[in-house]
Image (cartoon, rainbow, N blue to C red; front, side, top):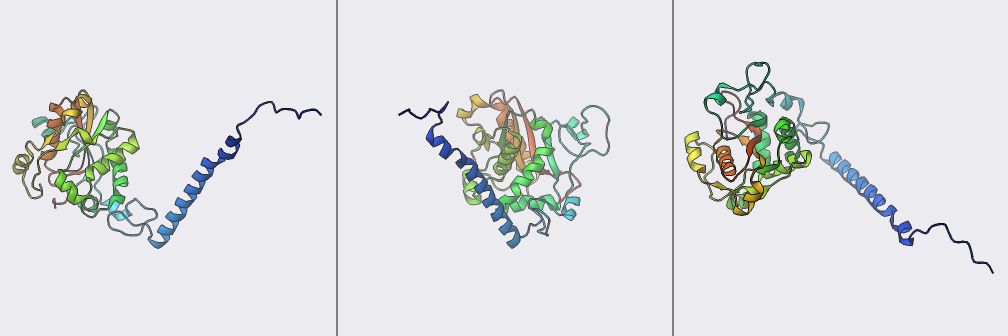
Length: 278
C-alpha cells in the first residue's frame, strides 16, 4: 500500500496551537481594561485634576482652571525660563536678571507660573498622594522642556532624604521624572544624586536661609561618578522657588563631572506673579 504523500514542509505542532494565544490574550486584556475603565467612569465620572469639576476625560483640566493656569509661553528668558514682556527678536533672549547674576544651571524650563491652579496640582501630588496627576503634569513638562530634553542624556530627580521619603512614601520629583522619561525616551537616573543630610522644610524661609539650609545636603555617590562624567543632565523638580535647592543640586552634579545641567520643573515662582508658597 502506498504511503500518503508528505506535505511540502512541516510546521511544529505546537506552533499551530500556541501562535494565536498572545494575540488573544492581548485582546482580552485590552477589552478587560476598557471595561474596567468604563465601569470606573460610570461610578466616578472624570474630574478636573485641580478643582474636581466634571470634565469629558480623565487627566485634564476644566476650561476655568486651564484659563487660570498661567502657562509660560514664548517669549521667555532662555536661561531662567521666566516670562519676558515682549519678544526681543532673533536669537536667545536673556532677562536682566540672567545677565546680572547668571545661574549655575544652563537653562530652566517650567510649564507655568506658580499660581493657584499650579499650586493645587503640586499639593495634590505632593501631600494628598494624588499620583493620578503625575502623568498629565509630566506630559505638560515634556512639552515645556522639549528643547532641553532633546539634548539630554539623563533625567535626575531632586532627591528626598530617606526619612522624609519614608514619611511621604514616594518622591514626587521622581514620579514626574519617570513619566517624562517614558514620554521622551530620556533615561531616568535616580542613583546619580542623593540627599545625605536631612534639612528643615524650605517653606517660609528666605533665599539666604534656604541656601544655608541646603548647603552640603546633596552629593553624587562615588559609584555613579564614572557614568555621570561628561553627561548632559536635566534636573527635575516639582516647583522652582528661590532656586536654593536647585543650585545646590546643580553644583553637586557639576562638581562630579556633569557636562551640563539644565532644569525642568512643573511650576516656578516669578516675582510679582502667582500664589504665595505654602
